[in-house]
Length: 342
Image (cartoon, rainbow, N blue to C red; front, top):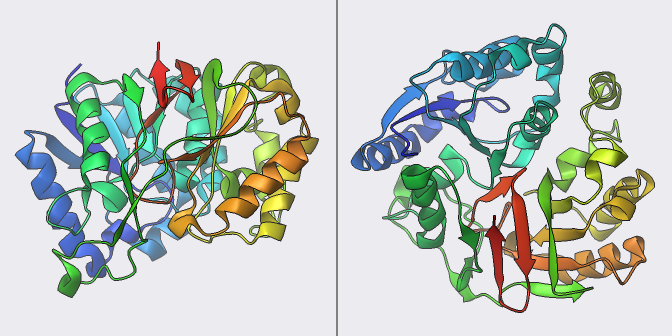
């Protein structure tokens, strides 16, 4: 399947509609059009942060409309955020999303973890790891080569065949202004996939995403109603659903301190996830901050050396980023430094 038409949606933050990213948006549009892709925007995608924050029902409507439109091949999320859970009542109270869903490519990451879990409930495989503003709109002269490799593979084929490590990783960009257009980010040699514990080979369908977002399903610190809302609609997969899956975890740009990371991992442990899954994949944290702490904490909390944990994947909030299919059988081989999708 070749992607001919992309619908860009703002399902979390409304940043894409702000004037201060207009130059980034234009860069992204030029790249997509150069690849021969027709670009559409959700009806409310460019309304800006204040409108998007105040109208979760509009975000939900844009998602359903994108699935209903037979001309749309790929739904591409603009960016993450922190309150996507607020779409749940508008997508599940009367089976709104279930009645709209068709077989399309859905791509996003970060707080979009919530949308991936929604679509998982409905049996739709999705793609995790990149977003329009974060990746396609990269203000360097080109998209980051490793990032572009996976994005264009998805455009050309509608699938990802395998993932291998990037040879480099980059410092997190701090200046996105028009003055920074064309500037490169400092690059560092990348160590490749790191087997933190357990067997080097394991299999299963990948499920998970941003650990900060997953924690909001168990903790009301960020929003007072996140736990109750997510529980009401059964967003977090059941233990039986987790059985045999590969858990994907990556940490946000907030770069959670080790104490916070421990609480987040312990919440998943108390939910029984680590006793059910066949393995864990962990994305490289931004700027590699706390990477050693995260490894130590995860292995301590899991407390089962037989459970394979593979770290330092180029997925999540560090750059560059690959794309991981969720809900597709995967075979991980740490020795061969590859994840193959079957």
